[in-house]
Length: 402
Image (cartoon, rainbow, N blue to C red; front, side, top):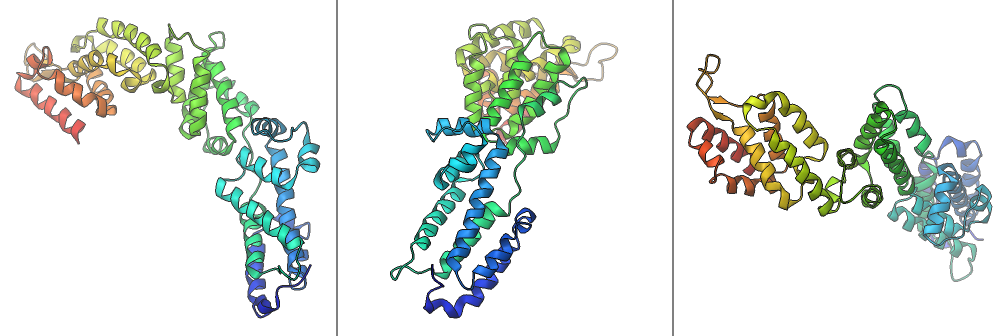
């Protein structure tokens, strides 16, 4: 190997200063191994060897992080990507090529695609530097690129603690209602897709298991509801496919609908499956009149509707009767009568009316056309003939259109 090309010797001090600033970001783990000290000593006399030493340390660091992520994950990702099989730690640490390590780290989620490309480019540069001759000499740009990429992408970053199924199991099987901490959410967000899916499958099995004690079912649903907010898009689709294999598509249960909602996939389920469920649900809703006189049961039925995904989970073809019921519940009826109602212009359910409005507004892109269509047909048309109710209707329109 050679020194920097003679044309760039005058730039060596600037390169060393830039390299020193980058090396300062390396984790203490590698400082203890004298990586920085040895790299600095090599840089002035043999920059190619300095680059190779730093890059090799980065690849070794990636191997450690892959093992820490879990041999189960590494094995699954390797098989999915048709890479050499992985049975144990030695396969990763001793037998995997540099290119395979970089590709596996990307597949697991330890590298983003831009970072994967940068490390692959570093590997190409390093190979060029290994075969330096009169036609190719190390340039200061090569040095800085390898230094910056190896340190920024790998050596400066702490290993990620990957959330494991056993960690979530401990949370779910608590004897108390569980709350998911921000650190759990972050760990799940950082987890590879394979691990995310394993965790979601476990939670679904617990939430759907009628034999589990109620607290475990409730905890599983709560954890699903929280973690689904940071679920990777591909995992949401994979979760939908998995979930549909666990349910009776001709007879979706309310438990299943609640779990699908917690997963954030209720709107992705097969439309016929959802239609069959919500047709039955509407029969129950219709039996509970939207009139204010049923205020004592409105809370329970509307909570159940929200838990099953609200209006967004209902196929378009089944949506109209739900919107009609909710609109009637929100608008109320003419008041001003009776001992307690003489000074109340509109009688409406104090519990049901605001909840009904929230459900309509939450899916306003689909409900606005239906609200417009229902406005001039009984019973909504009849209710609107009373001035104070018409004012409520117009306020709802303003909110839907705004």
